[in-house]
Amino acid sequence: MKADYEVGIVGAGFAGLAAALRLKKGGRTSFVLFERAAELGGTWRDNIYPGCACDVASPLYSFRQALNPAWSRLYAGQPEILAYMNDVVQKNNLRKHIRFQTDIVQAVFQKDVGGWVLTDRTGNSYSVRLLVLGTGPLNRPHIPDFSGLNAFRGKHFHSSQWDSSYDFTGKKVAVIGTGASAIQIVPAIAPIVAHLDIFQRTPAWVTPRRDRVLTEAEHRRWKKFPALMWLKREATYWFSEFLGLGFVGFEHLNRIMRKVALSRLTRHVKDPETRRKLTPNYKIGCKRILRSDDYYNTFNRQNVVLVTDPIDHFTEDGLVANGRFYPLDAVVFGTGFIAADIDLYLKVIGPGGENLIDRWKETGAEAYLGTTVAGFPNLCFLLGPNTGLGHNSVLHMMESQMNYVMGYLQHLAQLPEGTGLDIKEDVQRRYNTELQKKFKGTVWSSGCKSWYLNAAGKNTTLYPRLSAGFRRRTKNFDAASYRQVQQSVPENTKAELQ
Ligand SMILES: Cc1cc2nc3c(=O)[nH]c(=O)nc-3n(C[C@H](O)[C@H](O)[C@H](O)COP(=O)(O)OP(=O)(O)OC[C@H]3O[C@@H](n4cnc5c(N)ncnc54)[C@H](O)[C@@H]3O)c2cc1C
Image 1 (spheres, rainbow, N blue to C red):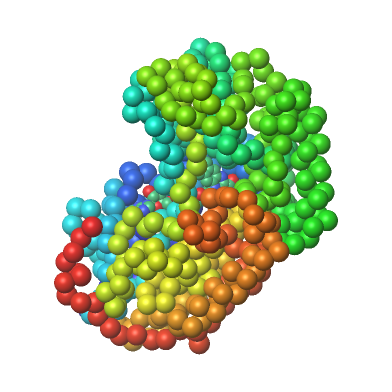
Image 2: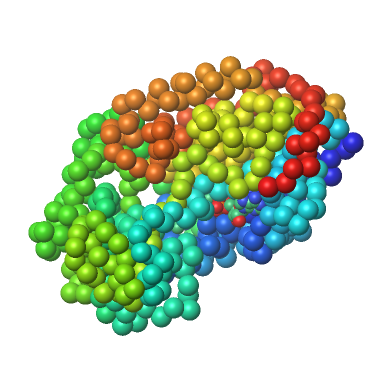
């Protein structure tokens, strides 16, 4: 039986759209995107908090095949990024490929299709020869289990579930956590609230973005000479790669980065005690570096206090930290996401009847080139295990993976219907053994606790080298690393839904 579509993509965030764009530009038309929400955008649809913006410059944090000469600022805000994504979809006529409000709950490999049968939450099924999962690494909000939170009568929400109808003006507010979202929210709401307590567990290393408005002259130049826009992108990319050297063993560069960050902290934060509290005691880069031009200055405001005492519990009208009561009208959880060990939300059942998530619960998330997984043929991840970056744009990683996926697809298309391509187990094992060894000597194995690590302490999120190396490795599809399979899943697993 021929599959309904050559390619099925799950997720219409940057990853899913990168896949669709590349397929379209590559002349392929038999593909479909499934998106559980009513709109596209993923991260940039969901995160609408004030101050939300990218921390990789927009000329680089955008598609290689859809450069935008009209960015209003160097670091575009969420509305502009979302508008850009919609614009790319419109210009490339991709909307007709997207099935919105289609939450895929199960994917089962089936022999008669030679691919995957996907089932959505309402019970509809679709068959695809190649399944591409772009379900996203940062969309499972993490809120620690605070005692008494249920009793708190004030407003509270996670940064990614922002309630725009709530007016912060004149309110007593706590922001809990000092990660990438929190440091954007804090400067944005500090001027309007009556009082802001910022609860910090571990200080972050903060470096400047040097954000600025992009001028009309720059827009005109980039429009007229796209090569100049291209140069800007390349320069940003290679400068980020250069800084990345400071994370992967170039100690001298790491020390310079540390010195620059510390001197900025000294210049920007007036109160010595607050400065001391904001000084990290771990290696720069070990946890995600944060980028902001206005976070530190916010601590010079009279209505902003940095609290480093641990939170004991919530009460009806505030919280208690280290025995002291903090009265509050609202609490924002900037406590990040569960990122390590991707939980797929959907069941992925291979030809042997194995559920991928059950395997990953035991071993930690593992794939070959962050893309294919042994025992799960005709399945590719975008931003799968160990493809995250601490120093550069993850769009570069997705697009590198798509180079590989295009080769994979070309190879698959030459095989008889019903054939699957499965990465050899020993190839995947060797790749992962090598990959884990490469963390040795990097900042990520210097001893800090970060969301890059899973519960067992294994780094399942980051690529331990520069992204240029990943691009080289994914440039060509290595058919010899794969075996061809023609198997079926046991009948009883097919019917079982989540
Ligand atoms: C606030 C914030 C700022 C960031 N800034 C940067 C930055 O500046 N630079 C950078 O490199 N990275 C940044 N990131 C990381 C960011 O997550 C990635 O850059 C990128 O947006 C991820 O895209 P994605 O498509 O992989 O995932 P997402 O954007 O999470 O998209 C996944 C999509 O899949 C859909 N989906 C999931 N499961 C299913 C299912 N079973 N069925 C149907 N649909 C499904 C979701 O609804 C979602 O639309 C940021 C992250 C956050 C949270």
